[in-house]
Length: 515
Image (cartoon, rainbow, N blue to C red; front, side, top):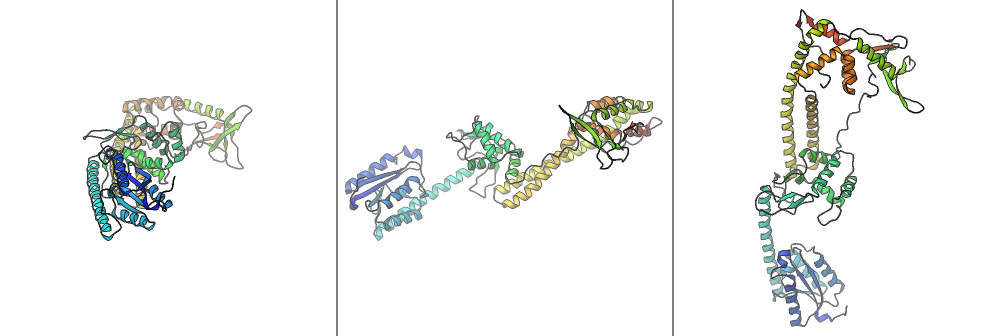
């Protein structure tokens, strides 16, 4: 660049706030043309032009504005003036305007406006600049207040008054939802929440997985870790509209379609807050060794344990006495389970039990499930209350009414209570069936207990075994299973039948298998 004389060097700065302004009378080309005409009339040589095509003047943090100031500082010996169409292009904040003009003056550069000719370095010129700057800020503040009220009204009506976040698209219309799920990105946002809710993935891993499946920003770039974290923290995806800049605004249910349910969002928040989901309890039984704990060593009374012995080509399940110094019982799983099946096949209830068993089963069912239905109603009502309180807690947190520590502590209590209630409900409901199917299966269980045990699942086998032999079975290497008398269940049933009448239901007798 050819150096120009100090007396007539000038830079031009032009700006518009929006794309709509770019098409109007204040467009960039008109601003630059007027500034160049101003320089020509006064004999100023234009050294450089700086253009901010869509930046608000409420802040001085504008890319080209900052580059213009840096240029002036570097070329202060060759630049004498900064020329703008009017001071509203330069700044709409009186403090920024005064500080920037004063900073330029310190390096020998003056600001000139084509519309405000009386703005200069004299006392009257400074007063004029301050007055114009004050009016510009008032106009900007008034417009901002009007826009904030419109934004608040729109949000209160359940509409999202901003640019749609990733996973949604903006739609027109003055009524109803103004954002709709993005058919391309919404499924991937939902997948991101589902991956995080498992507690098995770090945020970076979940981000990598959804990125690999095609999740990108609106401009086609991969999401940054900061943006991905904002996505996972945004309650808009589960249906809430909020105004982060307005702490007095109470979040409302939006008109838009949620991408994820509330409980999934809450689960992810718990994980992000460092409270990992409760792990699945370790199974206390091995399906390959169903008789562990039931059969005891006859020599010492210790329940047998089990495991797998290594062979040349495969592993073999075995049972043995686990007491050190005894080890009297050691046998294969096949041998012990074969003897156990033979025992079950020999078990037969008395004719009186077989005759009256349908009545007993029906009585047990009625007692158990009348109680269960009542319990389900209580739990369902409790769950509704717990979720409502948790929702109110979320709203209070979003309004800023709670500190993060307080919110996390109370929410952890709600999460634990809800999880416990849901678990109890699931346990009760999973065991419900019909009276007829239960009675029919109970009769099968009674007359063919070996078959019932064989078709049962691992957990159900445990329950059948405990119901039949509540005190366990003893095993001797020489004699095999020792206590081969009728089971405790049959003995209990026989004691219930007196003259074809029914006494109280046997303790522990309940549906043990799904029909």
